[in-house]
Image (cartoon, rainbow, N blue to C red):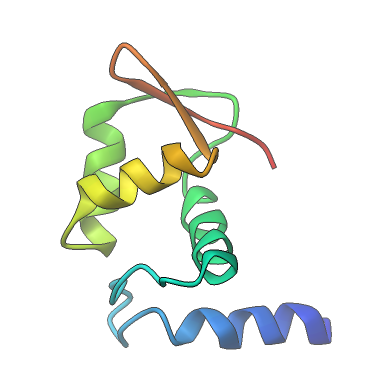
Length: 90
């Protein structure tokens, strides 16, 4: 494992509880984008995801799945059209 990958994994640990739930969205924009990029990787890029599927996935990691979903859209990690979401690569 590269030192950068290890540092990234260490940085992510501060945002999650030991059971893998997201504690809260960071206020600092750079940290928020870093975290959202990590969360977005849970969705397959280039495939349509029904809103129920997205909500279920996000509900597993955060109590406010709607705020998390909005942040992913607002920051450009997901696009939404007619209750269908698509992850934007990378």
